[in-house]
Image 1: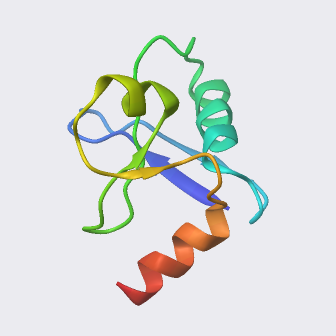
Image 2: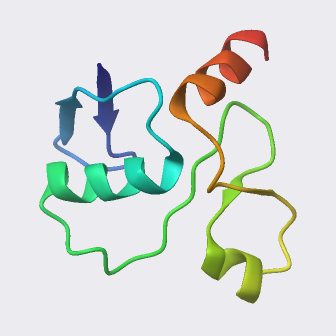
Length: 85
């Protein structure tokens, strides 16, 4: 179970979603879009703690920011990194 909250928004907007521990980050992105009612019109990024961000395919092409490709990462692995950081 995840609680997702938008930052810097008043009043607080949040959703609680149930996802599997083996969900990959690109699929989490799709799930978040569906839960929030979004149309996938904006870029996104995931970050675990203070680590480098996970990058989408578009980020890899267009950005010079260092990071890790998000596609192979499962949610459980990200949570493990957060627990040890």
